[in-house]
Image (cartoon, rainbow, N blue to C red; front, side, top):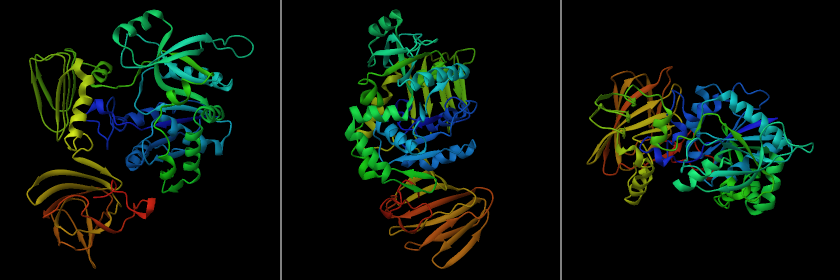
Length: 487
């Protein structure tokens, strides 16, 4: 049987300021009302004879991923958590080892979670071809037929036609002659004119058995570390946690460098499926529908004499006058303005923010938690204001602070507040004071989200001034709560 394995790693720095480390592009609704992860999974719903998908994600994103799956009513076969990012080869090795326990003859369809595929029937047909190739022992890569001389992708050069033992297959599938890195513009033009090069999509299909054999041959130490990480892994709520001590021993290698460029059984199945990886703002503009002036407009945007621009307004009105070929992206804490042909340089801004010790490249003002979300509203000398949303039935950790007191004001919904030994029920427009050092907890007993404003005051307002004594979302790793989970 065929089992999709969806990879949700990556930070998507070229789509800053929307995509950030804590909320990367694959978890954002960039091309529709669904996130790119959701689109990837929904795309598989009509594929016949396919098992439930396995998802490999960073442990910091686990509750957001789980919530997005719940929204589209999909229950994964496996939601595997990477303790650290190690690129695609260790992630696929761990997924294959886990899948092998269930079905030794399984076929794996490897899909990054951040791709766009416009022609789904053609995609299904390509999967069927790749399955037949994989059953004959090949590791099949999906090579996208290029239409322009792109310098954004690696390329695969095809070799001889794949044969099944009785001659050539009745459809196009080729052995791989070589993989090449992203070329310069002149070389990309040569590849396009040659006609035997394809964009490397990062999508693959192969049998679990053959993948593990090739990993044993070319990456035995990596495979051994992954095997130990899976064997010592454990279930935690709806997740499967890989053993961190073992997994960090893996080198950070892509499946291309680890196996595909070395193996003698690599094949490429050419596809023309309306594929995009939406790797930059200019690529996103190219993919989306435009108005009569060639503009893509999102949010509250007013334009006059504006052409061929992408403008995204998240929180404020954005007005643009007399400009062409610009990318303008506004969020609560950052504004990006650049020519479309400089879209590849966004990562330089991210690198500078990181070098200066800022946080805007990592987190948004709004941060998603397993129980809801928090959003920074204002901050000054000895005070900080946050908006907190707790989902119906959600319970935050029982905690206290050494350096700050808090005021909570209920905007809507119902709050059950515990302060030391006292429990109070608060409704809309009611408030409560939490003294410095008091043990306290927030719970939403209602059926609608609880919205409240939190005003912190004190000499030290950072997130590490939290002492938790009970936490329903406590991480099982070393018995310590995950700092990404709670306020």
